[in-house]
Amino acid sequence: MRHIEQKYGIIGRSDEIRQVIRVIEQVAPSNISILIYGASGSGKELVAKALHDLSLRKHGPYVIVNCGAIPAGTIESELFGHKKGSFTGSTEDRKGFFETADKGTILLDEIGELPAETQVKLLRTLEQGDITRVGESMSRKIDVRVIGATNRDLAEEVRSGRFRQDLYFRLKTIMIRVPSLHERREDIPMLAEYFMMQYADEHNAAYKPITPQAMELLMRASWEGNVRELKNFIQSVFVLENDKVIRAETVSQHIDVNNTSLNYDTRFPVRVNKETEQVERELILRQLFHIRQDVEEIKQKLSIIDLNDNNSIHRMKDISRYIQQSEMHDINPDPQQDDRTMQEIERDTIANTLAKFYGSKRKTAQALGMSERTLYRKIKEYGLGE
Image (cartoon, helix red, strand yellow):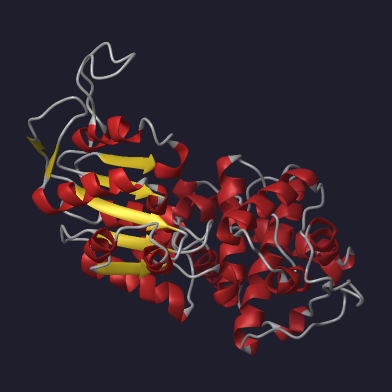
């Protein structure tokens, strides 16, 4: 399950999203047709990609067709191909998407947009395993797994006569419903952090932590555009805001949080729907990123610190006192409250950061400001690989 989260970006710990991942794991190895349905922006294309990559067809082609973007007059030619001279402008024989996807998978996105006459041909392809090019009378055998995706209620489309009942029954053997973001609000913090880390990594930029107050506002927003809208929002504030931290004021400036104004001092705690231990752990991890960003400036004037060297340890203590005196991020730690050794602090920091980045050593090394080679050595030294 964690593998699917990391590789395909199907992120979440809610019951709804875990059910989606379980179904993917169960049905991916089969050749049966699948219908994925859910609101626009909810991540249907991620589910389809995971189904292909986890199937026995993973080495075959994966073809995506947006049925709603192809004009009705040319969609049959696009899907099934055509013979030279079959219509004006057809100057040569041409394969369609189905032939291109032979031995692989074809995703028919927005399948509810297909014209009625095209639905008839698609049903034959699903039942007989063959296609007929436009302008030809001889059929061609193909071996393609069909995945349909739609944001429409196809059952209602059948009742209204806009979608064929027999095609609907043929597709709905296995149905995967992708929940809207408002149905799994508990996944919003994880998704927001994931997109922030992803964008920072792609652009070789510093990660920008999201304060608990800002995250609370994100969880209260409507997100009618679902996960796609959340991702676009994170990218926008990352680029537009110069602050090193995403604060509640920033969120309230960019999105409408159900007409709720920011009427509290962000320095005070807010109520969140999480266990105390989880909140404390997330706060600690975010503060580690805060400290890392500021220490980067200090490191430019200092040599690399060796924990086995007494002089280096003294320099580390000097840095710690400097950080306390400057009261970074309103934190004034009491060194008497932590009797761990420097090695123990370093070990715990590395372990927590590895967990934050789902075990990614490259991102962990970047976050902690050390080389990957040093990180691998530390992991081995502290036994974290076990």
